[in-house]
Image (cartoon, rainbow, N blue to C red; front, side, top):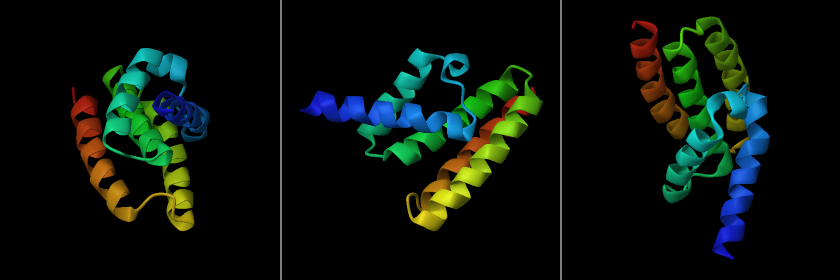
Length: 112
């Protein structure tokens, strides 16, 4: 039973990632699975986990000198975040906390 819920969680996140501009093959399947391990353990829902993966994906893009692509993904993230906030799928507190930490990481990667 546990495995089925976890498998469903991973599948749901995988289906949401393209909507926030994340290419799972580009991000690295095993890296994404590692992030999902943490998100599952922390009790985040599939939407929150999707945003965390997206934030980290943007960090990777910046770290690899792909700022234009990162900017495009951020635009998609912003659109989706607003939609999910309106629908009550994610909370403002979650977004504020994780987005703030992500932006600090983005700035660090961008300035390297």
